[in-house]
Length: 220
Image 1 (cartoon, rainbow, N blue to C red):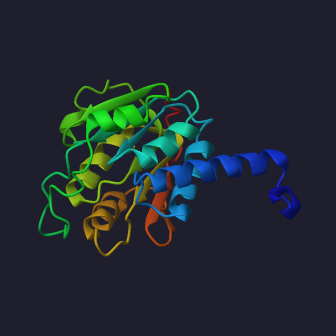
Image 2: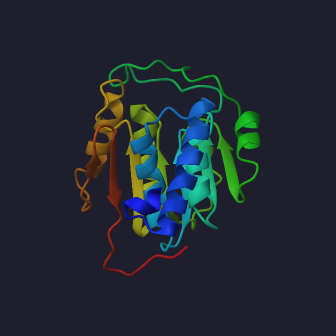
């Protein structure tokens, strides 16, 4: 039926596969993002496949969005950062959400959920402490932030931005969400003096594309 509405067969097959992936994650209670938000995530991961570097997600919860990334990442590794036991302590000046929320998950459960995908690297703990063992030379082509809190978002940007290869994408969830004002604050503060333009995807996403530096292209 999709072919009748102008989709090529390959496009229709990919759309069916994506919808099946989303519906499964939603019905299992693995993902809290909307269909449109998950579609943006999937498309941006796919679009960065020619860019050298690995993929990552900060804020994994039950692994629903990580599964979307894993399905679209190709042969790139996926680094997953989360406490896997609930949100870390909040900053009451910026974060209405309370630390300890989203505790209905575990590392074992998420690892089992993603067991069919290759090259998944788990980094449990609070960010940025959980990133201490990341090799200094490791570079990334796609990073997804769904950390909800100011400090996790700010320290995540400070860590990943210099490790992004040109053409790579950093995508944030809950940008502009009234329940997570710390996300927008951290993002806007960090990119205030950067060359990249923030592209807003209403109602709750934003991303940047890492620009080419004059000193040349960094590699994986």
